[in-house]
Image (tube, rainbow, N blue to C red; front, side, top):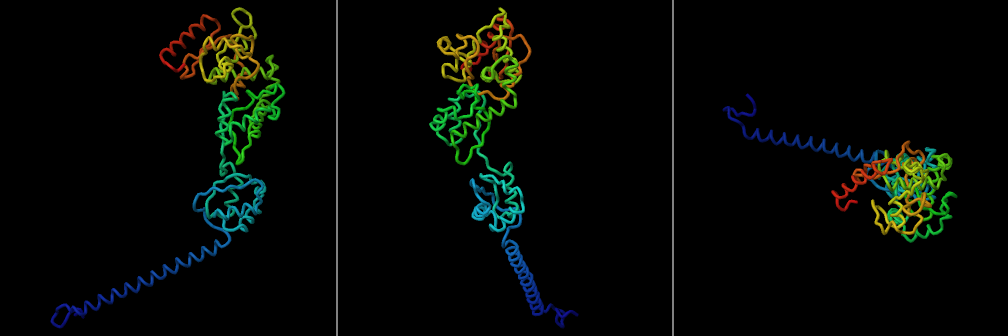
Length: 377
């Protein structure tokens, strides 16, 4: 018989209690043993990781952080900056990693996306990959802006004041303009996205925009292609600026270019050159922007840009045309059009005509759209 029962066959409560207490003691002992081992193992792993990372971190980093490398910083300077930001463990580790990477000699100044507790080699890898990790502040100049409208955009995007930019514009000879610009920067400040340095300078910013135009003009062979069309490069750029102001759809631009050249060359119903009669140039002459139509008073202004009064092209661009408009001016479509009108300003739909009668039908369509969309013309 089990010793859990007495001689009479009844449960021995005393023996049961003793055995329960013993079992609990064993469980507690095991828990202490296992727990102590886990605690010891955890502490040991921590000491091991500390030892492994005594001179350099391991892993993939912890928290996102941005670090700025100033212009002219040496590798030692960079290491100190990264250590202070908690990115790398030591300058020695960073210098060793940089020495093993040939591209580290061309690290650019700027702000970079980093992580705290990065291995030094990973930090170097980010610094030599500015396309992915460099934080770049940019200012975007859209197509079709005249300089007076461009200045506040530049000021807001760079942190410069409008006075600083206007002061730099007062001496166009310092901007790097081509000879045919006649020292007038209008139209030569190329619209694009530009990187803003940590310490922007107005003259440097303007020169960069002119340099971008010069680069595009060279790649498009603008001077030679303009001559092949029978025009000066300034005249072609002026045509491009008109195209930029007149239409938005890419497919319409070469057609507008052809219509302008047809008017200038006398390929008209009368066989004689005709005035351009463009509201876009009148708006420019009156110092405005963005209007689709002009008033009789505006069209009466005495200005070389008033193409209702003067023959031929205005003396220069009326805005800053983009690449598409310049390419259209250099490569006009084939056609007999001399008129065009945007019949739906919302979609940009433009209709072309070779006769005044057809043009008047298109104008009537435009007027009907304006009547149905009050305040949008």
